[in-house]
Image (tube, rainbow over all chains, first blue to last red):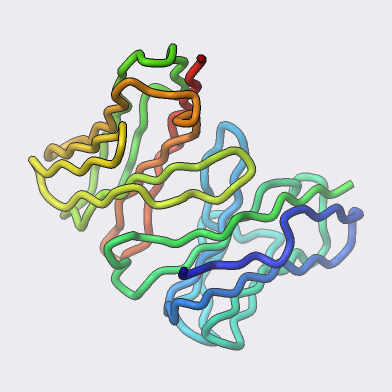
Length: 114
Length: 109
């Protein structure tokens, strides 16, 4: 079964810490995405990547960076975590034209910053 | 700019009480419309893809339909296990998905 795997389901970090969220896909997809999801705000795109070593800002990139050194792995980095970054983070991947299923999502990482 | 609007925001149903969710969209050239189901604390899971007006897809108690301006997700005789948030999405011309805010369905036994 094809998969997008996020390294942690739950994380608790302290304000000011550098946080790494890891995402790995096994579908050989070119496109990878990071979203955050908050009640009442829906899914908001943070960063995306169409290829290795390539990244583009989404709608809310402030306070985040990303790394894509290998095709299958896309990492989201919170340079200095703040309480307003407490959220559910979702990684997704897709083929270049979206394919017949659109995105495949990971199970999500619930991050709490205290 | 592509826009996707879902209604209602929340829907509370009695078991067996059929209903419909709406997804209206504005895109410059439809390249498909996707429906996803999301359970609390989990990532969205793919349900259906619709490509052209008049198309219908079914899976168990769910049926998705598409017109030129909107899509409906019909839930027939729902059960408590159908409780979830249902998301629709359309791809832009660079194939990024624009998501609606979702409809949270609660089915009471």
